[in-house]
Image (cartoon, rainbow, N blue to C red; front, side, top):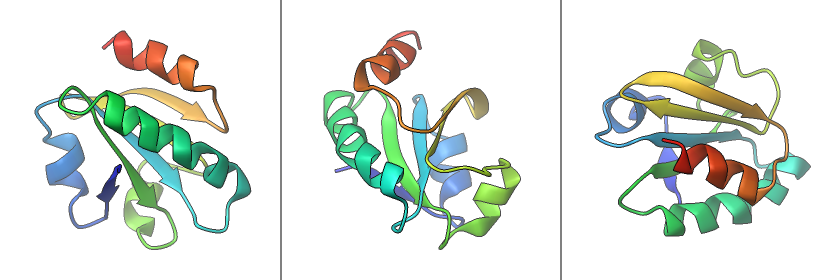
Length: 104
């Protein structure tokens, strides 16, 4: 199961994490987001202990979404050492995400 990021825990859990972080900015009503959900959950299992992978609901947590200018969902952002290192917008293949994570 992927981690649940919120406006309240984002700084501590994503930016101050001791490993790379992949955040899936999504909404419950978003069809493409629902398509990505199983991919995110699979990656969370595969990279457990190596990459923190989780989701942030943009409807419930608008501050973080606004801060990172998330205009389209799903948007996946990869952070390393508190810095944004990559952004992927829209539905993407699991292998493409694995390549980005493996490069970290």
